[in-house]
Image (cartoon, rainbow, N blue to C red; front, side, top):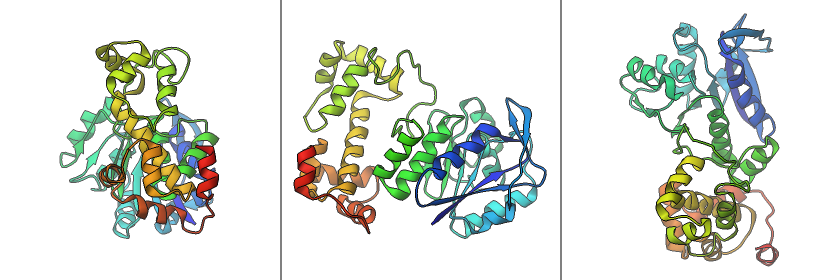
Length: 323
């Protein structure tokens, strides 16, 4: 069982606190502990909202596999006990993550020194000033820097938590968790924080029909011209609308969908890796290996071994009937 400790520091942002509790509580394989400072209160829009009562104190985070710091007042330094705790759990090898202004607590503990990090775009400059040894990126949804992860504000915490589930349990489990909390299954960390959602992504307006067509035809070679023609736009207009509605480019979005499809097939079927590569749209096993190495730091076969361990998977014949 993977233990996730969520620190409820005094003044914690209530929404940020509940995000990891909800995501990890509905995902099999996790135990969630809300580890609260004595007398801690939660806030909403800067106003005290409710008092926190938990059977777990801060010291109960010492044995956790993952420790998450939700948002707090960035102008209020954490108590020395909190920074010592974070340094201790990081030294022990636990994964440490922050949501929104929780990054300021990690910075105070020295955990962002020499690392890439992010926070809410409004406060990125303040974080960079308070932690000059960190490389603060104000534009992305979250940053995964190995054992230390940080996210942007508010809903980006959901993206970060789903990313951790995906990293721990695989794409299929993360997709099911996303379905349970009614979230899109994947928004990559490098997507923009500020996206102009003029139309619901995947709806009947805007790019919705083109996005569904792309997802339904991942195994078919397609170019930017093909996508533009399907969307009935020029390539220049397509790129502009794609950035506004998804926060990324058409071909990068397509690559993310193909990687997601390949991961699901590797996890849930025993199809040959060559077949997975073709079905997901990579064409050849060499291209699939290249993208797995670049984006996941592993090979397709190693990924399958990791996430199929102890699982029963459908036969290739059964899977092929559904493709």
